[in-house]
Amino acid sequence: MGILDLVGKTPLVEVTRLDAGRCRLFLKLEHQNPGGSIKDRIALAMIEAAEREGKLEKGGLIVEATAGNTGLGLALVAVQKGYRVLLVVPDKMSQEKIFHLRAMGAEIVLTRSDVTKGHPDYYQDRAAAIVRSTPGAFYVNQFANPANPRAHEETTGPEIWAQMQQDVGAVVAGVGTGGTITGLSRFFARASPRTEIVLADPEGSVLAEYVKTKLVSTDVGSWLVEGIGEDFVPPVCDLSRVKKAYSIPDAEAFGICRELLLKEGIMAGTSSGTLIAAALRYCREQPQPRRVVTLVCDSGNKYLSKVYNDYWMLDHGFIKRESYGDLRDLISRRHKEHAVATVSADETVNAAYQRMKLYDVSQLPVLKDGRIVGIVTEEDILLEVYGNPEHFGEPVSAAMESNLVTLSPNDPVEKLREIFERGMVAIVVDGDEFLGLITRIDLLNWLRRRRP
Image 1 (cartoon, rainbow, N blue to C red):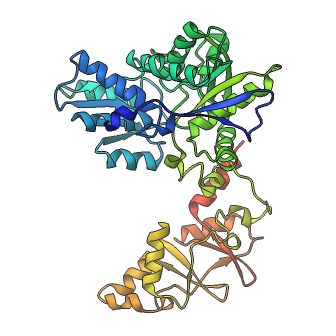
Image 2 (image 1 turned 90 degrees about the horizontal axis):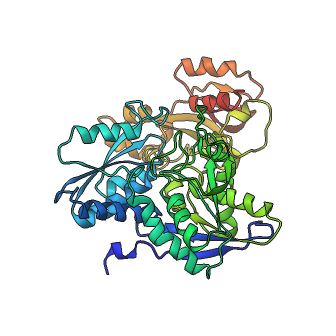
Image 3 (image 1 turned 30 degrees about the vertical axis):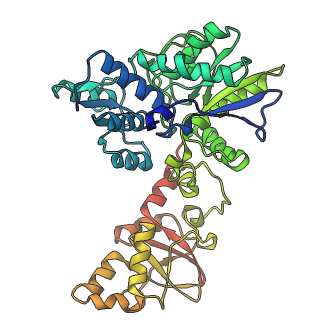
């Protein structure tokens, strides 16, 4: 058995600690595919279809536009079959996905996520342009590839039907390309016409409104959930059998991701949060018990720097914490919460250097007996050890800047600009107590959260 033989045949579990009202909610664990997502199914199907149709040369180049998981699936299949792969991805993709893709040998072209279809930097338009200028390249084009929905019609749907003992009241799915919801819709139209197909859509996408009005709105918003939601109806997407559609805000989707991990032990990706949030809404609305299925599309391991990172959630306003009405509200990493990387005055320059690398910061507060006595920066360390590498063993107090400018919590926000213009970081203290640092990005995040 090879790795590609493990695609599909994923387990299905019932959630028991989330409030599903009168219904029973089941999750198809697609993150158990070898590439970590539901997209392994279509990657294998689309490449094998291209091989049958003679569209792929031996050792040829596969090009695709993807928000990440299709790329991972394509890279997995391509490596096993001896193809090269180039992926055009929007710049909102998580770093974990990008690192994963590059580790699998994929070439990555990052492009803008703030432009829509028709713009040359839109990820699908950029991929198509690369194919036009590269002889012999095969454009997968998952958005219009008929092998995409067929993979779900022939595998995902039948698996769900069998695992649910031929009793499925509703299936909840999202739309990235539309392949999943289209394939499932076609399967259940034959196997169980009474099964309702439900759309889960990120707030800002046009698809939920399209289901209700059959019109494609030009009022497109933005969302942080990855992999689903669109500003158009993909060619491969058939929503004609969708009975209900829910528009789910990012905050609700991310909250469900974290709740699912806490209560059910399942670490799901952000699109799964959207699907499960919609499924829970649907379940709670039902007057009679129903058996409802939705999908864990990929693993939350790819989103550790985002939805499972408290500070990313705080920066984006998805986690609320105690508010003081003063400069303390701008400190994203508060010292009393042990959230600030620091170094003690009696530690070495090398210890400070290693801590900067570990926490990916360029400066550290230097503390003594709980009080801040200095700041040490990359530049300070460089000046200390340049020409004298043995100084890595000196106390960090030898390299730090001890002439500090501090702010109290009650100082006006305007003082931050003065400090930043001098190239300094804002140090907030309350008497002798070090409260934390305010950086330029902290101020920007605070200003963004205050916009109307």
